[in-house]
Amino acid sequence: MLELHRLTKHFGGVRAVDGVDLIVNPGEVLGLIGPNGSGKSTTVNLICGLFPLTSGLIMFKGEDISALPPHERVTRGIARTFQNIRLFGQLTVWQNLWVAQNSAEQRRQNPVRRWFGGGGSAREDIGRTLEFFDLAHKRDELAGNLAFGEQRRLEFARAFAAKPVLLLLDEPAAGMNAEEIDQLDARIRTLRDTGMAILLIEHHVELVMSVADRIAVLNFGQKIAEGSPAEVQNNPLVREAYLGTATAA
Amino acid sequence: MDEYLVGVLSNVGVISFVALSAYLLLLTGEITFGQQAFFAIGAYAAGIATAMWGWTLAAGLGFGALAGALSATIVGVPTLRLHGLYFAIATLAFAEMVRILFEMFRYQIEIDGEWVGPNGADGFRDIRYIFENDISGMEFMLIIYGLLTVILAGFMLLERSRLGVIFRMIGEDEVLAGLQGVSVARYRILAAAIAGALAGIGGGLYAHLTTYIEPRIFDVMLGVHSLAYGLIGGLGTALGPILGVLIDIGLLESIRALSGYRMIIFGGLVALLLIVRPRGLLDERLVHRIGVALRGGRKMRV
Image (cartoon, rainbow over all chains, first blue to last red; front, top):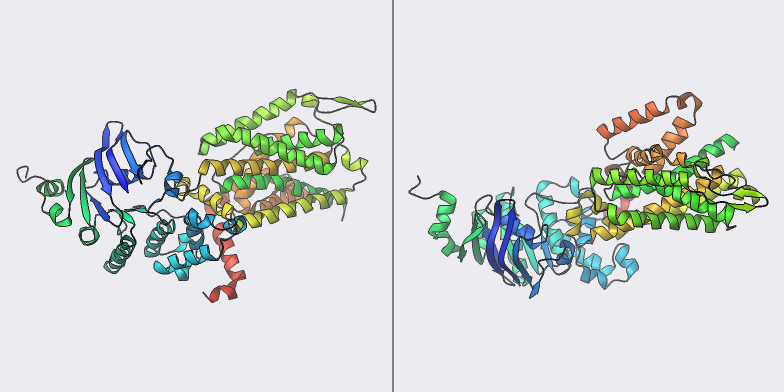
């Protein structure tokens, strides 16, 4: 599904991402972890095209998308959420989802319906999305007026509405309480079971260990480990990255 | 209705077009000091069409709108890559260039022994279509407001449409808009073209209302005011900029006791509102609340 080959991004002298190889398969949750500043968010930003690569290659569904602008990557099936919530606060919950909605769904509509509120099937689709994310009662509220937990759900819902085949989640559990994290865990599993490929960046260790099928670890822009949650947990390099070396202490 | 009031209301109507033009660009997050350029281009184009080529008023206004849209597209392609302050300065520079070009623009033909047409800094006299066709001031005012109503209806449709939502998305966070699959550059240019057409129609009406235009009318103050109307009246609805025009031209400029203090009150109002209500009197939140209240009963079912 998604293959990163020697992905590299330098900001001046800083090697934010330095030769990372990664593969995300359909129906799989790949956890991407690492200390602060290890290049996780930069990796996600590169995948969705927010800035150009220094070198390397991004292959998606067998096609090189490294040079495509962000909006064309979205239409090919890549959607994301942000670490710090980004919503259109002056628009309603419904409007936030409407434009994000997968364009394939929309193109089946005739132009008048497409541009003025969407036809029955598009509306029903948004309705189901709102139900799944427990936001149906907030449909006509301005996104900026929602509570924090609701905003997080709306962000997730908006990424989901795009019907992505690859979903990039950048710290979706940040600021959530235990109950909300359980719901998040369940939603991620549901989506994975539909065959979606999910790249999950997360600091919340329990969530990653629970939901990820595989985990890759970044440190100083390089991949230092990859494997099942248990393998990664016992990897000495990973322990060193997080805790420092025993001799240095 | 007395003649003075007709004059004031006609003015309010005409300036509303250029205010709506700046408002549309504000929606997409662009601050422009240059919409007076398209107002000028529309005024000259429509004036030339009716006074020199003998076109009808409708055709002249259409020509003005087209000229505005075309020139806005041509200017928009390079300048819309710029953002914030840089875009604002580029629009200002362009508008001043247009004004100075009109000061050098001479194109006159002889009609019935008189020379008609733009004559550089001396302006363009005798755009006499409404006199020649016996249209009264009152009737012309109705023409202005008829057109304005059509445009406002278009804006109301826009606000409910996907296009309106996309414009607002780009205005709020263009990177995020791109990540919803929106081709930001294309929609920006579309917005600029529509805004150019609106200013062009306004200019065409203005030329026929006053029968006389000259380059110095289209100076930067007109652009600054056009921008300020949306910021005062509010960015939540197209009625916002019109409210701004009513406050400025309808009250401050037209009531004699106030007119001496117009710029002081207007400037103070802008400063005050930027502090207490940065998105204007009729801002998105207020408009949303009014919308919910109006549809109240229906909403309760959900």
